[in-house]
Length: 174
Image 1 (tube, one colour):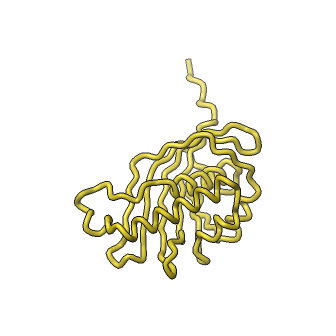
Image 2 (cartoon, helix red, strand yellow):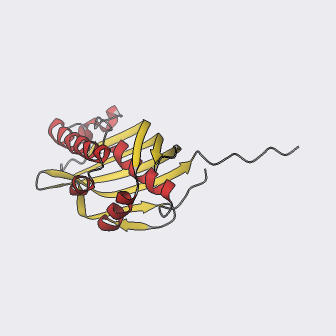
Image 3 (cartoon, one colour):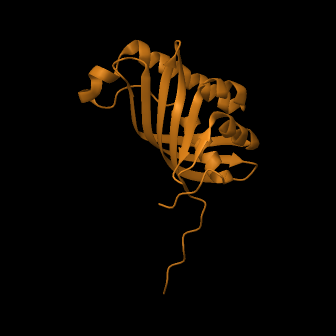
């Protein structure tokens, strides 16, 4: 799998789609063995409500509201060993004109710590979108961390591995 840096439009788009899709994911435990620490109804419902708010804001291009759902110390990490703080990440997202056409999430794992103040989500995603009027397809592997800050779940760490599916496969040798 070839990965790109967040500095490219494709990867910025992938990171945005990653966040949008992550915030639409279910907050249910995928493993009965982890049910004791991951299925407390009240925290899971609150995380889900935060995810829904993020998705609603991102699909409207409301980056101020999207940013409100990120912790002040939010960091986005890429495979290129880059880290972007909240302000820089939002600045990059505002530069992209995104229409999310289709997305699929699979292998979703979510949980809420027994203390009730930290939540996490991992998943693999497939996205079809139209940034700046150009069709784009990509796959991702994502990890997101959330913190309960005064009753509001906010993302404080995110990591995205992005594979651009638009790249042409190399021609087979004869």
